[in-house]
Length: 52
Length: 282
Image 1 (spheres, chains in turn brown, blue):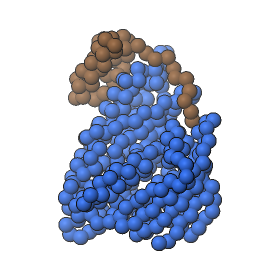
Image 2 (cartoon, rainbow over the protein chains, first blue to last red):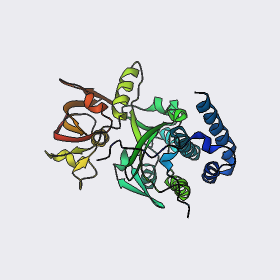
Image 3 (cartoon, rainbow over the protein chains, first blue to last red):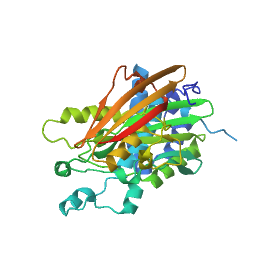
Image 4 (cartoon, chains in turn yellow, orange):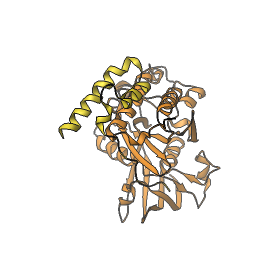
């Protein structure tokens, strides 16, 4: 039976700074022509997580 | 060798972004001209042949295993209806439409489990757009994901919603029905008291069916019916029992909950076992 269990440790948004390995990994899964939009959303989420 | 990170370790918001990216891609891909509305013009019921139905069937769940999507259940093939415009809707008389309002995915891996729902807001209006599942595209996307992140077993499915031809002031009925049928917790039914109506359910080889599939099958085959469902649900420590009656007539499906509650349906994930089910011809 599937149930809510422990999730792995969450990565911090700071790990997704420009040039970071985590961001490069994301870059690999997003299409070239969509990366710009995705990256913008990513940075907005990072910024809002900092401010909150 | 550097171990691939776990997708579930990404911040939750980022995971949702990724899924949205995937499903937005879907929405883009499926934005095709619909033949359904056109077909109305010449009196063809749906304007699609069997192969089209096969491709579009919305009642398919998939489990992603490395490199491939595996359908885990084949629901009725002939209940898929997509409306793409208000005009198509207006031409309906007595038949429900189905549309996909959202995708639900579950990520499971070892001891991890999470679930999330992506609401496809632009697609939420069934009269604007229908949705077709480009499985190959999704598979490709998941394959790319699995190259960068640790393999996940991803079970995802999309909710199919009944939309009724609400001419006049029947809008409220429509909303009620949609809410009920869109609950993902209507899980499995075990058919114990078999009747001839069981043959209406396509997965006759299985003991477990989904109540909504049962209802949709019935709707597809019958002009009217009354279906009484008595179910027992288990959800971890909590268990419940309830019953409801679904009455389908004149293109509308209505539910009545005698006695207690709908709480059984609000359980996050229920394993629902029916004690009995019965269908009366009306």
